[in-house]
Length: 376
Image 1 (spheres, rainbow, N blue to C red):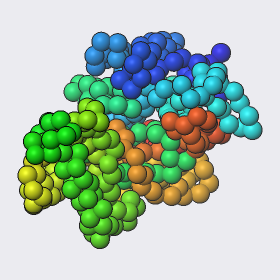
Image 2 (image 1 turned 45 degrees about the vertical axis):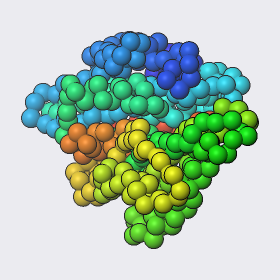
Image 3 (image 1 turned 180 degrees about the horizontal axis):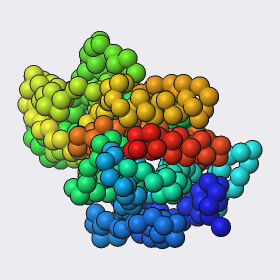
């Protein structure tokens, strides 16, 4: 049986859904997507698969209403990070009200709450419609959410990433950048011929601290604090006896709501343009960008979820912001007012991961109450 939150969550954890873009040879989402779709159909909910790419399916499930109500979208991701550092990662165990296992916290606990809330919605005879998108690839490039959003929209959305039953109304975005510096390859004994690209990169690295200080001097976001920048990877040279012709630096910039991609890229273009080191040559390339997210506190979905959470939990949930990026930003960019709300736990991407089972049940109850309030 997989009808209780604990039983369903354990079944989800047992299915390996390691993202193959993160871990070569990872199982991917196929088996889990089929399990989710079959489970929903067995409980009277229509479900189909959406293929974002070969072997990368998402699940789209719908509870159609009798007409005249609003449409609410629930979002959860199927994929997990790898399990190499986690013994018995796919063997869920329960201790002191916590369920341990890879994906329990990030985010199969939220997925289980969504599935159960969808079954509740199917029995509620709503005017509006509820849609679940259980998506592939959130941990890497969000191929699943991007694909599903080409097919649908909604009046509002709830992303069930873990928030410890707080309402997340803002989170940071990120941009990934690559900078190359150029030298001249030559034998190490010929400084008259060679130019050291790694040493040239030192001028660039020297600007990082100044840029971070500049970010910290700007007004802080009330929930997210300051933007940040850090060097992530550096590579250059070929052997000890040669002058390196190239050096490559990859870095990450965490962004705040209201910052534009153009302004963020201009920071590094300006830095490189004004570096006056002898024979300095460099190029800047944007690798990937994901926008920051925010939603007004008076948005109808925020107000509805906050009210229903207070009724279920017995206290008003805290409004919060989070530093990590989520698919909520893509939903908001698509014009769908979105809020993030999920269970409590710890250990995302870590060697020990757990979710509080009571909070999964509470999350399901809050989602079900919000669906009735928002869609009817």
